Image (cartoon, rainbow, N blue to C red; front, side, top):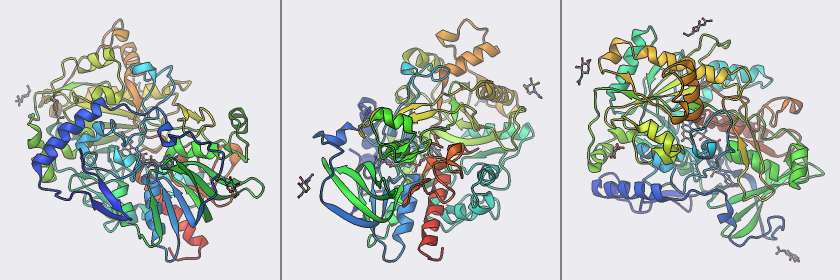
Length: 619
Ligand SMILES: Cc1cc2nc3c(=O)[nH]c(=O)nc-3n(C[C@H](O)[C@H](O)[C@H](O)COP(=O)(O)OP(=O)(O)OC[C@H]3O[C@@H](n4cnc5c(N)ncnc54)[C@H](O)[C@@H]3O)c2cc1C
Ligand SMILES: *[C@@H]1O[C@H](CO)[C@@H](O)[C@H](O)[C@H]1NC(C)=O
Ligand SMILES: *[C@@H]1O[C@H](CO)[C@@H](O)[C@H](O)[C@H]1NC(C)=O
Ligand SMILES: *[C@@H]1O[C@H](CO)[C@@H](O)[C@H](O)[C@H]1NC(C)=O
Ligand SMILES: *[C@@H]1O[C@H](CO)[C@@H](O)[C@H](O)[C@H]1NC(C)=O
């Protein structure tokens, strides 16, 4: 079993502290936990929280009172919790459905396997029409992390803010205070950067570490050199410009995963903040007459509890659970709530505007350069020195930001991620949810030591999905329809096709020829009748082998006008409701030309500044 790193009465500690040196322990643990992850049955609902089937609509009597109650401790909630705990004399409560991380998920190289553990909610989607067709049941995967750290327990750790234009658009959309000029100082406050990036763009005093992996991938080097050959630049993509290529900037510390649990929750001032784990929130209590949030109902140890909030409730349960909790509490589309048997307190378009990054996973690139396989203890020896393939999250070694020639926006609309060997991980099929026949086509001819891949990420997808309740039972997962690649003018699939051509062009460079890089043949049974490499062949393959990059945002979007779909205002207050704010990925008005985790930390830090303004405290 992996050791669990524990918060003991709010002190961060390790249950069995012989860390750092123990190669044997780590080797055995990694092998055993990988096997466990392969066998583990992922949950399909949250019914385990309510073993006695208590009626969630009967309120218990015992209550505790706090100034602030925070729901969820992922990228957003962890930052809110830690920063609020620093305010003198406040009394706060964090409710998190999961618990503490362990030293298995701490290994970035185990990122895929981490999805096969209790740290994954495994929400999932409805069957798709035009994407995810090569996945079981034609359903996209929807992994979300559970525990202190939330989705940073299982994510790809890439630090990427997106384009300045993203934030300028937020501001231009009626959200003053959110332009890049406004948010850049907040990014810097949070960051402890070791990447030697562009001057003026990075911080070195924050709690969130940013570094490059020490592992030197020859496949990444060929990718970087091939792009330079094609006239592009190697850049700090969180700096002066965003179009170009780079080694990935990572949220790791000496090669280990740095969750927001470890970075922020472990630094909480315990005098002012109670951390409550295994606490599943079922409802926010809102007075329907005054439209004021006054508390939270949650279940812990098979008992319902109520906690009262004198000042505010802060919802940070993420893009999937935050809209779900709002709807269960009477805030959402009136017609839908009525169908579910829930009384509407405020009619808002909660759950609409589900924006994500569709991603194409179907490329194999053969090469003649190998990353030699080692026995596990060899990888562990490197890892404990902060080096080696285990420091790469899911083998992600580098990123590039590009533009299609049909884009009308002044920022990147494609990201290409360079995934170093090896992709024939035992967990690959289970983690991605591929059917047997898709998986067979994908691993055909793969040499685990030499075959690498590039993921293609549509940064500015036109397709928009939605989220709805399955029922009024708070322990049912919500229904999610991503609607990937369903936009009317085929903009999104065209973007992927364009990116495939960019990659084919890269394979023709001297740098790629020097490692004998060639496209591996991936022919799905469903696409075999199309001429190999024709546009029809690619469109077919894309619809089968595309899925989420797991960057859903937007379901409680920020904006001035609830009639235009806004759920929160520019101070993150839920429209029409007092004492209730949201701070997580759900408030993004749109997808970023980057990855959401650190931008969500920025949103959370902004929220604490708003709360301090209201308390008339200096920021
Ligand atoms: C496989 C994968 C790879 C990714 N790679 C990257 C990457 O490389 N870079 C990047 O920037 N982003 C990446 N992301 C996305 C990123 O990690 C998330 O967007 C981000 O962490 C979400 O933050 P959040 O605060 O919105 O929600 P979360 O981090 O999901 O936090 C929500 C928290 O609320 C808790 N919660 C939910 N429901 C309840 C309830 N009813 N009661 C109490 N608590 C509840 C959850 O347990 C969780 O801890 C990846 C995601 C995945 C799944
Ligand atoms: C709460 O207290 C009231 C009055 O004492 C009692 O009638 C009721 O059953 C209690 N409810 C619960 C859930 O314990
Ligand atoms: C864009 O690029 C594609 C593929 O390289 C090419 O066929 C097309 O003509 C270009 N379109 C424009 C508007 O330049
Ligand atoms: C790489 O793949 C091989 C064969 O599929 C597997 O045995 C090995 O454990 C993998 N190595 C790593 C580091 O994932
Ligand atoms: C890989 O192939 C290239 C091109 O044929 C060749 O120049 C290079 O020496 C080869 N490298 C190895 C390690 O075999």
